[in-house]
Length: 544
Ligand code: BGC
Image (tube, rainbow, N blue to C red):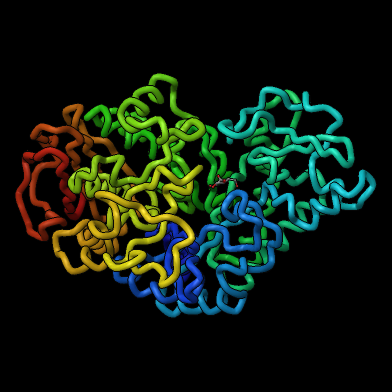
């Protein structure tokens, strides 16, 4: 019997596919809310703000790394996989957070950093103590720095090589990120097993899955670019097997910044690798489309992106805690993006842009709302970045990516209501400062960005076609993006105007007729639609 014909299997499949209907919120604990007056956000602070997130319409939080770390890469350099950073609280606080999240019917995923550890991790400390130490083989060593030549440098603004010299033992070690983040040696079966134990530990504590950091780089092979190798996919399949066999219903989300063709491989055969993957190509194209006032960049990337399987889902996002990466953009696209979005050279980091959503879109409420509506209606699950729901800005005086990780602006009072102490980082000032942009005032103002996004999230919640439907592009003038989403007996039509002039969209004849306009909640007979600059419509009908 096929699953669709068995009510029991159908229901359990619907439930296990929860991530398809979810709304994710990327949360940086250090910047969220401080409850013990030390100037750093903490786990209790996340608990204190869960009601806010629920009120906004979030159903799953993704926590940036919360493990002990010397913080050379803000926690992506882990020195103990089985504990909580002292600034954030204790394992008991974490267990309470998981419980509080689940009590509210929400979910929680954490960051899983497989590729590398901190150089302060006891494994690396042992490994570098002598060439014969049993942990030596946990990392990748070489007598020469010429191996794997030609492999790209990810942190090219700071690093000059993927090899670092270890004076004490007279060999080089391999690192794809900072020198302080030595890559683990996945050719070593002990490393493979260790990391699966880490996975089991957190799943046993109740987390609903992982955002898997940098899964692209696990193995190295001479003569390749050391990315997405068959060995890497084979290990990721072992990881998925642990989920399928021991923790069904939990989710794996891949952070792999690749072209659509390589990216799709992270879904394996649809049941044996990742459930979800960030859609990096789409993210870049959304900003290109705004820059050009033309929907073509989005239309073409959607057309190039293969359909995913029943259990697979894109994670669609606008901004995150990193720079807006342009590594996969063509040189011409990159130049265009710099011209449009980096008037100040300080805004460029590595090959990307260290900027937040609101200032990127000129602080224009219409554009910001439209961008959010896009990621809520294109195929996938939206992932919002903390603070973007109120249009927070960046602080370019802070180094690296810290400028987009500043304290959450809760109120217009001292320290933005984030802490009673001196905040760990300088707040944003000027037009995006907390006197102008904060949660309190936007919650009180029905026309605020907060309410606009909240409304969209609540509309989306009742429309499974957005998370699960297939997509078909509709013919439209080049500045308009128009598509149809279809799921079971429901059809959605979404149309967006990406330019500064008013435009008309005419529905294909066979699509004309009665619709429910979801934004206005009224029934209309629609043949054509007039769209003001940066306006959009979401319409629904039953049947084809
Ligand atoms: C994370 C970065 C981090 C890097 C190394 C990424 O892709 O998103 O913030 O610096 O992995 O762990």
